[in-house]
Image (cartoon, rainbow, N blue to C red; front, side, top):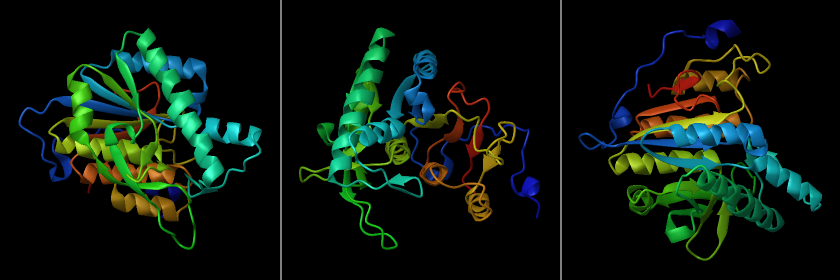
Length: 287
């Protein structure tokens, strides 16, 4: 089968589906948009400014989840700390944990919160340790790889996050969790977004999850912005990985997107940071 056929570019938009995956949406569930931003957008003032203004303009309740890996890599390099990545996930030893805590929980998170405040949004910066919002366990060895102080999420205290939302606050979530024993854990931001989306869907919200970055969506050809793959299913994802079309940091993003659709998140898409309303990009389908 030719690449073009495997990565078919569909022109018909997928309609929004409520209750996808059997999630317990309450009748008339209030809409909630969760935006996950990462990549070059977080590092570029102009791109970030536009994204935040578009985020503010979104109607209804919303949550912003951010990454910051490039900034963490740059600062680690300045400190003489080597960065190691495996399948898009950062190996986090003790020195790197200090770096990501400073960068994610401090520099990036509070910068975004301050800029949202300047735009009139009552934003509050959170890590998973704050109010025990997201608890994780340290990842065990996988295929002989020790990821270090990396967390796999066990629980999201969605009622506490809902409390912030219902009082008019907008949570800005950094990709850090904790183990309940006093240890912070570096946790993939795409995973954070997916886990929060699933938990809020279980709370009864009609959740739209948008992964946005500097690309137009998932691309069939990395150097061709016009080669957006409009829809990805679980089966087609496996084929795209086998074909080498999807790799690196896109792997955990799509894995988490698929998990969200299977857990009742109403709509999940991957798109450009200028498309927060989801008019283009790649829609993730549970089928």
